Length: 174
Image (tube, rainbow, N blue to C red):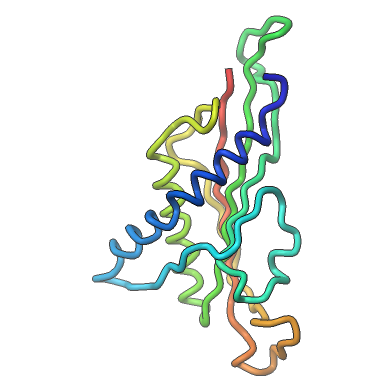
C-alpha cells in the first residue's frame, strides 16, 4: 500500500476505544490494596495532534489522542521498485487531570501502564508489527490547569493539575 499511516492511526484509536477502559480498570485493581487512585475512562478521543488539549476545560479529560508522526523507508531492508519496508512512529497521548499533583502523577503513570499493557497484548496493528515489546514512554511534569475557561488560578477551587503521557510505538510494515 502506498501510504497507510492514517489507517494505522485509525485502527489504533479504535482498539484503544474498545479496550482501554478495561485495561484502566485492571490497573486500578492492581493498585487498589496498596495505593488506590481512580482512573476515569477517557472522555475525549482524538485522531491527530490536539494542540489545544491543555486549553480544554477539565470536564474534557481524560483525553486520548493517536497520531502518526513519522514514516521512513527502512534503510536496512532490501528493496525493489514497488516494494520496500518502512518504519512508522505512532504516538498515543493521554492527558489526565486531578485535584492534586500527587494524584495526577499517579494517574499519568497508571494510564501509561494500561496503554503499554494493551499494546503488549497484540503485536500487529492494522498491517504493521510493533518493533519493541517495551515502547518508549514520556511523562510531562504536572502543571497547574484552570478547571474552566473563566477560572481564576488564584482561587484553589478553580485549579486542578494536568499531566501528559506519550507512548511512542515504533512499527514496521513490509
